[in-house]
Image (cartoon, rainbow, N blue to C red; front, side, top):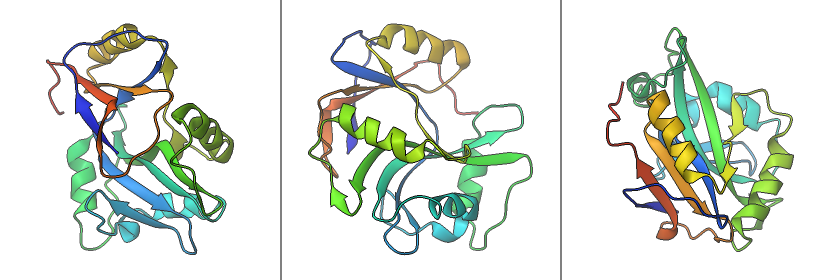
Length: 191
């Protein structure tokens, strides 16, 4: 599911809001051996063994949607280090860079398609599944109704922006939905 753009933040009890990460969109599944795929469905499993090791601890039959992000020792996102690792022919960790899989949605649970459930139900299911993870895989924090405040926090922190998602939205693969909106900070510069 893809994001539509919006230029200004807004507050609505019908939406939940998340920080927008500067990473690489990635689907993960745990049908048999865990696998990672980028948006173009290219396999990325071999590049991220620490994520695969954590996926092995999760139940079988999951499909997760999220963003791989690289975090430098200073706490800032490091998109360029992530790209170097993502494009490497042979896995090589980048010194001082931690990789995290920030999961924002779940499409399958126990090999069952749950994309027709509303977002707020999928988020509860995801929270239960990821509650025991060690931080390499984590659920994206979401905040109901406070888009303007979260947008200001994103600006103050030098982040890319926020994402607004309608709480009742279903997940429609490969579709740009008006129910999912990205609101970018105009001053954001990729570090």
